[in-house]
Length: 371
Ligand SMILES: *Cc1c(COP(=O)(O)O)cnc(C)c1O
Image (cartoon, rainbow, N blue to C red; front, side):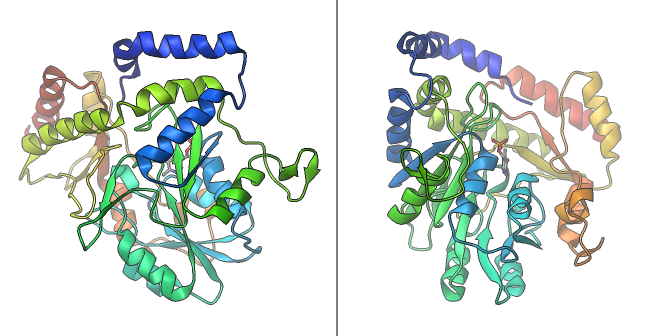
């Protein structure tokens, strides 16, 4: 699905030098390169505070730990997402409240959020799924009216812009009270191991989250809160510094590949190509198609036999995951999400796809569909 090797070979000398510099300095944890990367990311995103941490799941957990929520408080999130979003809510003994997504953009539906709000609701966690930003302007308006926190799960859309009604733009993850991202290797800004970061423009929340990621420690060895240990290590920061400089170029490459797929599959009766939401510039973490009357398993096997990977993100909606079975929910409650789980599939999407590969992939998909 990704080609990290070819990408590495193009930036090898810079990456190798960055790693070697960290080893020479022996400043492996919280070294100067971590703060340098933090500053560069703040500048790139146009956000006041970036708090590096160990992975995207921690970023979500630390955010939620810093909001002063009580067990049983309700947190609204999308029914169609990666499990981490709901997992941290459940781990903190908060109550995940799932809501339906839009059938075209796959992102959380603001009307469904509005309907799910109760007196116990404290926060909304929109997920910018597959690289496209959720309808943040509507979500922020709802949150303001009901006095709720908004934590953006931006693990799949770093670098995307959100375009407001007045034409102004902000980077995904910098619109809500807090934004979270992951630097897992296959993400749009990926390191060579685990990593993550939290963004906020709120000084007080930033202060609190810096304490939480560091064992709840305000003064050295004085622990005012129950925290966690969540750090980005210096070697990963050195790699991310190199790749951040190329993030926009990488997004352009992904968009180019997506454009090729779009053209090849345009108006095919059995495929719906990804719909572009007019308020976001898609950064294509995934290129996800909705099939119509296609034996999806056979298609994936057919592609697999030609060594073309294809994946289903995600095969099971959150409310039907075994660990999250809840008497509040039953099959059929989220028809859009359930339909997507049954019909979507994603094709290889990364920065190194060339014309030959794209042609081979699209021809193979069409050959299967038209046979
Ligand atoms: C990848 C991802 C996460 C978790 O990130 P990790 O770094 O793997 O912990 C959370 N939410 C979404 C939507 C993701 O895609």
